[in-house]
Image (cartoon, rainbow, N blue to C red; front, side, top):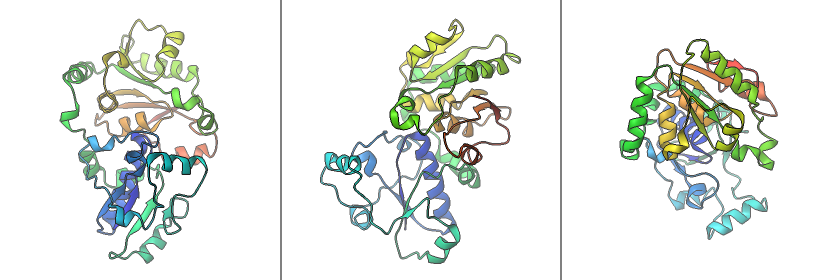
Length: 294
């Protein structure tokens, strides 16, 4: 059996699921997931369970072979804060993973624990038809309020989705990892679309509404947070736009990847990461995406 460590926000959950699904399919193996981060309330919330995915949780007996036990959420968080290793030595990390080596060692009677973020769109596109179906949001999580907005967006093909992520990207740790997307990037992205759709309505998805009001003329803007949608509704709404301006976030990137419009237009910032940006973004962008300086 293949066990994947599920962690991070929705974008990362989708990347991890795509990789584990693809790997398991290659070896006709069953697969399930370690949900420790979500069970102990570490970081982001579990969101992928709101999709039509085959999300099975690994049982504790199997898990204990790979993770050191925690007696409580506080204990688990303390181990991480102190830098105490919470994995045992027999896990396969993303840094050490080599496909041919894994193929040579794979045995369907053994359990293999895989840890990493696997931010590479090739794992999704390898099984795009199946994963597109699985990455559909369950209807029970979509409110009537959401459905009205969705219909509005679908009716207006010229509308623009603009994603601005500030919030957690401005904390001490993330400042050393991610580029801060400049205002000019958003201005240039809007100008790019305005050439084709001069009177379009712009729908703003953001965790920093104040920044939006301080930097834009919002007369033709609709701020999505005003509609009180939950995270999964905001994400699903993003996938309905023909025109998308992403931030350096896998949340809006995935919204574009799961967008089934034949003539979709996606603008992405060139610089996402402080280190190894070219190598990392080469695994995130499709040839159809428009890349702008930021």
